Amino acid sequence: TLQSISHFYHTTFAAMVRSIERCLQSLVNSAFRGKDAYQVLKTAVMVFNLWRLWRHLRHELAAQSLKSYILGLAAPYLKRLPSVKRQLDKELAKTMTDLRAQFQRGLTEPRVALPVEGLPEQHILDLITKRKELDTVDWTKGKVTGAVYHGGQDHYDFIGKIFSKWGFANPLHPAIHPALRQMDSEVVQMIINMYNGGADACGAFTTGGTESILMAMKAYRDKGKAEKGITNANIVICSTAHAAFDKAGKYFNIQVRHARTNSEMEVDLKHLNRLIDSNTVAIVGSACQYAHGTVDPIENMAEIALRRKVGLHVDCCLGGFLLPFMEKAGFKLPPFDFRVNGVTSISVDPHKYGFAPKGSSVVMFANKNLRHHMYCYLTEWSGGIYATPTMSGSRAGAPVAATWAAMCKFGERGYIETTKQIVGATKKIAEGVKEIEGLKLVGRPDVCVVAFAGEEGSGINCYAVADCMQQQHGWDLATCQNPPCVHIALTLPNSRNADKFIENLQEAVKTVKEDKTGKFNSTAGVYGMAASLPASFLEDAAAAYLDAMSEVQKQTPAEDAEASAIGGA
Image 1 (cartoon, rainbow, N blue to C red):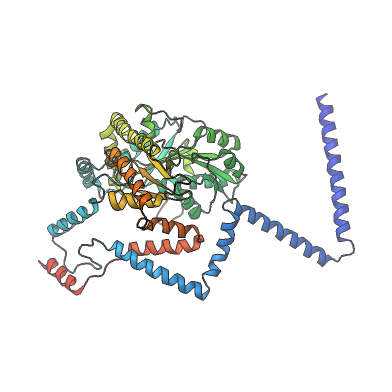
Image 2 (cartoon, rainbow, N blue to C red; image 1 turned 180 degrees about the horizontal axis):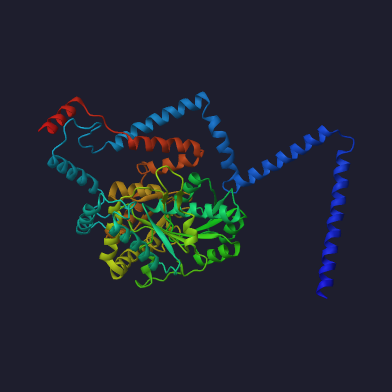
């Protein structure tokens, strides 16, 4: 019976194919009847090129809006127009002047060349002490968002002792530094255990969250090519995902598609699912995301990843040393780690809430096969067989040893206590924002970030509130866009000032409401102008910022003479 059904199915299907083919043949012959071979070829080439154009447009519009695409095409030509170029040059020159003034504030003994004679050690130590004082004045009061996560001098002194012992060690040479190799692998394994990795889970130590993300995306791209023959890989991320994923797209020629958010600033699952196609190698969830603090629905995303047979990377770079301890600290949170079937990689930064020194991050994989696609091999190099796990060849050993030391110093109980303090302050500030008339929360304060904006119709500009908080109360907050909002990322130093923050925020909102002079509109003006410009124009301004940041202040003749006198002393 089954053979009869199979035979009937195949003969019927074959007959349908022959019927469609005859119809198509008749249609094509009718269309080209009476035309010579050249006309047929010309039409075929035109249809082929239209098909290629359609594919290109579909590819581009999957990653950006039609308006952005058209503006991106037009901007380079607009910038060549003499009138536009003159105005741009004028504005960029003014921008560079303002930025130079900003970056050259607080310079000490500018130097652009080696001293002829080496400077005395004590003079260098005195100068370094002076420079360190300049760099700590802005955050010691506990009014800076993020950036400085511990702030305790005793802890910094302890980490400094570790640093001094390993400052010249290089993990690239494990035979020379076996103890450093041990600490490197132990840091990775301790974090894998924090994230409930299985027996085959593995990872690598990197220099920061961006490198961890870059390495994960490279692994997915190469795995897609090796196992599925994908040559035009894409990843699907939420529009709130960290900028490092777009950076990976630029570096590794991966198309990045951005899914919309819902009202709580978590990823829109339906839109995410629609953006996945046969060239998708991974989707990305955040726990938590930078701008608004929302944790994406990782369990739901994992179901999509399994169904569509793609990888799922969870970015825990920001909350990496808070999330694993939240349950024991008394805060409920849905599963987000390797306990969730479908999660294939995770990035974590010990140099944030792990209180390790800057330059420490870990990227983890659910299995060794995926990690192998992260590696770089050069088997025929004249210097010998060369292989590295991450971007760097030589790496600084001090951050590895100091990260191991910080993690062992705090231990599980220590991190539970800091999680209670930081997440508790986050919840307190969020409740305080809700009580301020005219303000609203943006996203969910799931872990360590509280974002807010003015309610519609309130007349409150959140950027003006941020300017007022800075000018009148000394708070350095982060300004975000799309949608406009302001956030504070809680840390140990600023979490102690949660009550003061709420009080100052109430005062700032009242001040902004009453202000008629526009004295708090500088940030609002910048973002308002930015929203009306194509990305290419904004990139020129960003380039000016980066150029100004790397400039040095040249020495005056008097400074040259003073430096020579010190060196010769």
